[in-house]
Length: 353
Image (cartoon, rainbow, N blue to C red; front, side):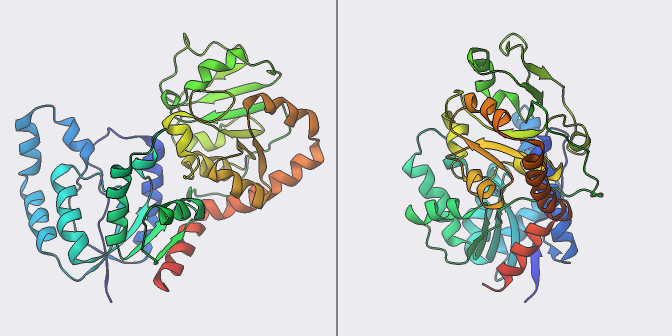
């Protein structure tokens, strides 16, 4: 059976770099499989948002190529189509995908995020809407087994789903930066989603340096003297400029647990910064109740903590030999992440479901 794909074509510079890196890497691997594109024009809610008035939005949708695409999607039937999820194609195209394309074709979804889980209190109705979409899909690649188990317990009936385990972070080389054990921890990501950083000034155990990277830095709210801000780097350059012995995966408002909508989400998802750290050969420190913790412990690539206050204890109890052993485990996985191993393996397994 011929395989088709909805090709991600970016028409705007208004994007989140880490998300774009993840989607681009999926596109690179999908390109290798010679699937037939069902679109030759990009469609994105970001483009719609760029048009600030109604006339601008109408002009965007009434573009001849997009009108033709909308008609094609509306009537397309009995095709096996690969598509990134969330769809994020704007209200009109998302409606067509959900009401026509999904029901009249066999869709294989690669799930990057589940918005109904990005909350400190999951709304049943919102979760049900997303699960209904998954139940209509033919096959699905989710983040991990924890996410799949949660969805099954809440109504997921689709048996043709599997875990990718780790998103890839494709790079052209396998050269790992020389990294020694020193009291430096890295946090890279959207700082607006990490309000706990402004609470770190209240930590009792602070005998380490936190090397901070990412957008939306506010020096007036992040005042801890042991936090060093390094600016914003693109997804390629940052790999060779991360300065520290461990990469921190933590979200929410508190230094004692991961809470709030982004902290709670860590219970289910594989954050893309996990892939970034591993691609850079950096061992991990993560919340013990996160889905990431299972991967970290299974592969012996770092430490799981209940509170940020425990970071100092890690440095007190580890020696160079222990660190080198953990780092070697990270580098073995890092080689696979850089080459796109995990999605390729998931797609091979997906074909056999």
